[in-house]
Amino acid sequence: MSGKRWTVGRLDGWTVALTLVLSNIPTFQLAGQHVSIGPQIAFGDYREVSSDLHYRGSGIGAKATLEWKKFSADVVLSKVKYKPTSDGTATTAFDASEVDVRLRYYITGPVSAELGFINRKADPEFEAQSVGAVTAGARMAYLLGPGVRMALSGGLMFGAKYSGGGTTSGVGALQLGLGLTVDALQRRIHVTGDYGFQRFSRKTDNGSGALPAPIQQSLGRIGFAIAF
Image 1 (cartoon, rainbow, N blue to C red):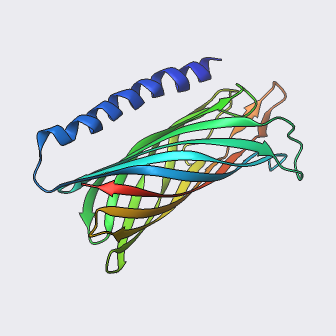
Image 2 (spheres, helix red, strand yellow):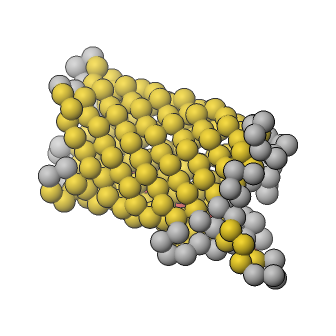
C-alpha cells in the first residue's frame, strides 16, 4: 500500500507541477518557440508474469509538444481499456490511465538527452499493477524527406514503485520508442504516429525468496496535432 501512495500521490504532484509549467511557458512569447497539441487513438498490449496475464485494448489520448531553442518537451496522456485475451489466465478487464512526460536537451547531430517520468494507474485497483518511475535516456531525430520526421528513443526507468509491491534493479526497467510526424497544410497540421515499449523486470518476495513478476506494455498511438 505504501508503494501505491508513492505512485499516486508524489508522481501526481509532479504531473500537475510540470503540466502547469508547460502550459504557461507560451505566455512568455519566447523567440523560436513552437507548440503543437492534438488528440490520438491508442492501441495497447499489456502482460504480467511471463504473459500469464495478457490483455489487449484501445482507447484515447492526447499529446502536447513544446520546442524552444535547444530545449523541447512532450506531455502524453492516454487511457486504454484492456480486456483479457484467450491465451492468458486473466478474467477481468481494467482501465490503464498513463501520463508520460519527457524533457529534452539537444546535444549534437541528431542526438538529444531525455529526462522525465511515467505514471500509470490501473482501475480497478490491483487488477493490474499501477506503476511510476523516473525515465532517462536519449533520442535521435531524422528528417526523412520534406515534412517527414522520424525519431528513435531509448533509455532506462529508475525508482519504479508498484501498487502491489515488488522491486526492480537499477538497470531492470527499460523503454524504447519510435515516432513519425508528417507535416500538412503548410506545417499547421501534423499527422503523428508513435510506438512505445516498456518492460519492468519486477521481482516479488512472499517470504520464500525472490520470484520474477515482470510487467510489459506495448502502446501505439495515431493522431494529429495543430501547430502554432
